[in-house]
Every structure is written in structure tokens, then in C-alpha cells.
Amino acid sequence: MSLITVVGSVNRDFVLTVEDLPHPGETVLARRFVEGVGGKGANQAVAAARLGSRVRLVARVGADAAAILDALTAEGVDVEAVLPDERTTTGIAAVVVDDAGENTIVVNPGANAELGVQDLPARLVRSPGEIVLVQNEIAPEVVAAAVLRARDQGGFVVLNPAPARPAGPEVLAAVDVLVPNRGELASLLGTEPPATVDEARELLVRAALPCRAVVVTLGADGAVLKEAHSTDTMHIPAPVVDAVDTVGAGDTFCGALADALGRGTDLPAAVERAVRAASYTTTGLGAQTSMPYAAQLDAPAVTSAF
Ligand code: ATP
Image 1: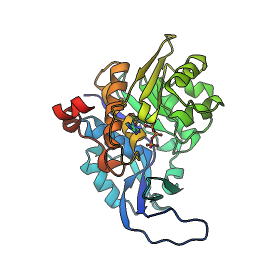
Image 2 (image 1 turned 60 degrees about the horizontal axis):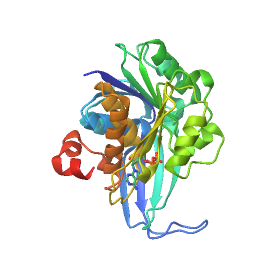
Image 3 (image 1 turned 120 degrees about the vertical axis):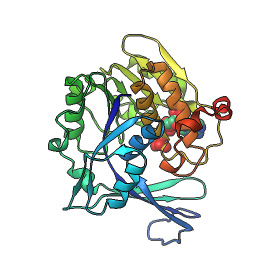
């Protein structure tokens, strides 16, 4: 099986559940506190590894990250290129979630901001067609260098432009599959987010994004795929689920897409599997805690529901 290289962020997630989110100046007591491993890079790496892929992560963490490295290793993620940085601490995300599922998140990038172009492995792609998966929680120049290097070395580049920020045309042109959510797509195109599947289809047909394909995720509406060589779009609906918490859905989508593409699955079928995997994640609390293993996603009972 081919290797998936994920270049991205690692965070310590501090998740606090409260009855109501605090107003400015207010102090509220948490009902529950959970610490876990997060960050888009780590989450997407774990999502792909749980589905059976060989995954290595390229990232920076602080000197405080021994438990995180152990947890990622236990998930089967190769952390040899996760570099401990003594000068800083691991990224932190303080997540406060209320009873209605609304959340506020404050992120301290910490070591993620220290990941530099010099930290990227010289051989980002070891054999042609290998998947390289990148997100925007690291410096823009590192994203650009990773995408361009992966492309030069014959890799297959998947970019999740989250959080949204401008990307140069030369970077987008080197991307095989761009995976924005509705807000990120709108931000890239300077438009309003598409409210419906039809609006997303229209936007993708009109958009002049130079990537080989764009997959926009649409929450409960699933995803829409547009390949550059075709004027058609394809809507992949999401299964109807009892969604309790969508945290980690987007990351599961990207990890599962990379996993399927790495096995040689064609793009429409890979998107279909990514939608199912992401929808599965929404049925449980938390990000990594509710990401499916291959056996769970392929179980007959689940397959009929998903
Ligand atoms: P998040 O930031 O919450 O992780 P996102 O904004 O990056 O998510 P979304 O478009 O909200 O991404 O969701 C990604 C995928 O998750 C969807 O394509 C779908 O498969 C699944 N999903 C999300 N919300 C639901 C839902 N309510 N019901 C079923 N599937 C869902």
C-alpha cells in the first residue's frame, strides 16, 4: 500500500463542556473537561490511519509532546518527521462546547507556527502517485513549498484550505484535489457561501479554480465534486444520521479521501467513501474519538445506514 504524507498541525485540544457559552466578562463552570490530540494535520493523519493507510506526519510540536507522540504512534502514524521544538509549546486549542452543540475555539499555534520549509523532508514523495495531504494551519510558505515539491516529485496533492486564506494561482495549479467547505470555497472565490447543493454546483461550474478537481463539503448535504476536464458536477449526498457533534467531520473527510485515493479508488468513489466516513464521525462526540476504523465503516449494518 502506498504511503500518505500529511503536512500540518498538531494541537493539544482542551475541550470544556458548559451549559451556556460564557458572555464577555462572565466566568462559568465546566461540566466536563477532556484533553485530547487535535490539530488538522494530526486529525487527518489519524483518520487515514484508522482506515488502514500507512501514514507519516510532518509537523512541529513543543517539548511537552511526549504523550501526543505516543498517542499518534499508537494510532499507527509514523511520527519520525514530527519535530520537537524546545523553544516553544505544542499548539493548543481551547474548545468550549455548550448544550446546543455551539462552540467557541481559541487556538494558540505554538510550535505549528515554527514549522519551516527546511523541516519538509527532501523526498516528500518516495514513489510516483503517492498522496501528500496539506492544510492551512501552518505558515503559507510551508503550504506552498509542500504542494509545489510534492507536485515536482510526481505526488498526488490534496489541499484542504482550512482555515480559509488566499492561495496563489501557482499553488492551486499544483493541487490535484482541493477540499474546501462552503465557507472556505466562498472565501477563495470572493463570494457568498453556497446555501444549497445547486448553488454549490453553479459556483463550481463558474469558478475559475486551476486545480484538477474541487470537492466542496456541504455538511448534512454531503459534497459536490467538479473535475477540471468536465463541465459536469456530481453531488454525493450524506447519509441521514443522528449528528450529535460535527467536530472533526471535515478532517475525517480529508483523511478518508486520501486513504481511498491511495488505494487507487477513482475520485467519485473516493468522495463517496469520504462522505460516509465523515458522517460516521458526526454520530459521536469529539474529533478523533468518533473517527471510524475500516471495520466499522465496512460493517454490514453500518453500510446499509451509511
Ligand atoms: P467541521 O469543521 O465541523 O469538521 P467542515 O465545515 O470542515 O466540518 P462539513 O462540510 O460541515 O465540513 O462536513 C464534512 C462532511 O461531514 C460532510 O461532507 C458530511 O459527509 C459530513 N457531515 C457533516 N455534518 C453532517 C450531518 N449533519 N449529517 C450527516 N453528515 C454530516
